[in-house]
Amino acid sequence: MTTGSVAEEPDRFDLREFVRSAGLLSTTSLASLLRAVITAKLFAVTLGPSTVGILVQLLNFAAFVGTIIPLGLTTGVVKLVAEARADQEATNRVVGSAVVLSLVSATVAAVLLLPASGRISQVLTGSDRYQALIVMLVLSFPLYNLAGAVAYVLRGLSAVHRLARASVINSLGTLLILVPATFAFGLAGAIGSVLIGSFVQSALYLGELRFAYRERGWRLTLTRVARRESRVLLGLGAVLLAGGIASWGSLLLVRTLVVRELGQHDNGLYQAVYGFSSQYITVFMTWMAAYVFPRIAARGPDRIGELLNSALRANLFLMVPVLCGIVALRSPLIQVFYAHTFLAAASMMPVQALGDYARIAGWSLGVSLFALGRIRAHFLLIAGQSALWVLFTVALIPRLGLPAVSLAYSLSFLLYPLLSYPMLRVWFGFRLTAASGLLTAFGLVSVVVAAVLPQPFGIVVVPLLPLVVVGGRRRPPWARLPWAS
Image 1 (cartoon, helix red, strand yellow):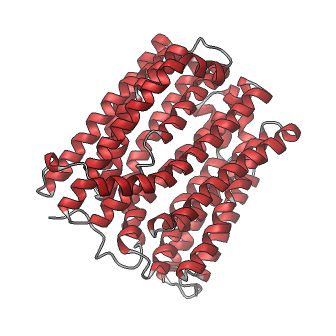
Image 2 (cartoon, one colour):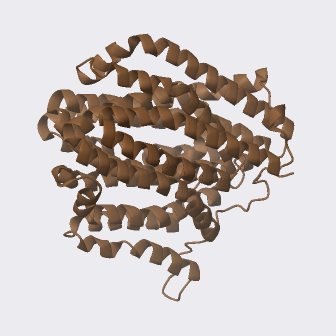
Image 3 (cartoon, one colour):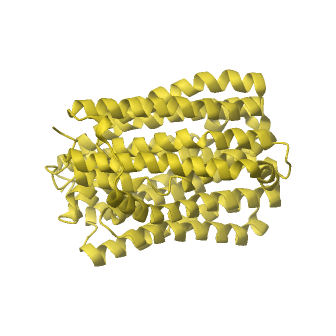
């Protein structure tokens, strides 16, 4: 019986295997990206900037609450399932506890929020006319929460292909609901499709979990709630919940500040910036959660140095070309995926991308803090960045207007690399190799050059870092740096 344990994994992430697994996992995010692209264009054409601003507020509220109601049963589930490895009984206790806790917490949240739906609408939008839409979002919480818990179980089991399949089918299936509903009913149709999608997503993920159990010769009916596992999950979850509240709360605060200070139109414009950013960051976080994190959690702190250095190099190999391509083609991309009325957002995208570069480089290292038991440090990174984003936005928006939001975002994410590396250095003796450091600097220069060159000529920078990595792996005579050591 196998659970996809990583006990026999080597002390580094092989670039080919990493890219292959990331590619499979990225089909999940690419399907989500396709859905996001179509929906962004759909909303831009059918709703316009002002109504998109309302929609974003409602969805940000749902995302914020959706961060609270899982009680932090996210990465903690991955950690415990990965650590259980091939132990069926231990895995069953974690799975049963996570499923029951997720359903109970979401149901309680829905019961509490439904009577306040009118007030919530008033706070978010300045009007209670969207009360019915808030009700639909709240009713979707239980099944989405269940699906989320099951998805993290699949990650812990390293059931990569099943996770990808369920996610792809879910993305494409919900599109079939969303597009006609939005054309027919506008904003109400867009929100209604969220409720319908909760049924689709929960059914898909539960089906894949059943198949994953069957592959191992296990029985899903033997899962059960266990007091010890529930306590551990809730203990880990408390920290993750606090971090999630800080992260989504900062987004909600920043967007609300933009609405109050600059208006719904500017809030809709920033969605074009944040929309691209959130999509490629979701791709990154998907393979970090499903591929990198479980292997670090299973292995423990032994020989963590090469594991993290190789993860950083592989992440730069994959993500720097994406960042360079986005900033080099920002105006055409906005016109294709949004509308010409959103073009004013193009100037903010390079600044946002620099913040995402700091986020990618920092989290390539910082992801190990939670996996290795440094729970408070994990929370410090997330809460500190969230607080800084809000504080910088408050300070800069009176002087800079809407561009202040992207600048504040980028400045706040400098905290990730500036804190995660010293922590790992002190606690685990981790050292960033000279090759990894130089590659990180080269990646930063690549993104800056892609942003500075006139559009679309920055696209020439896109293949440079991958070529450096591949060339370094082959060790040509002119390359002395051990990129793949």
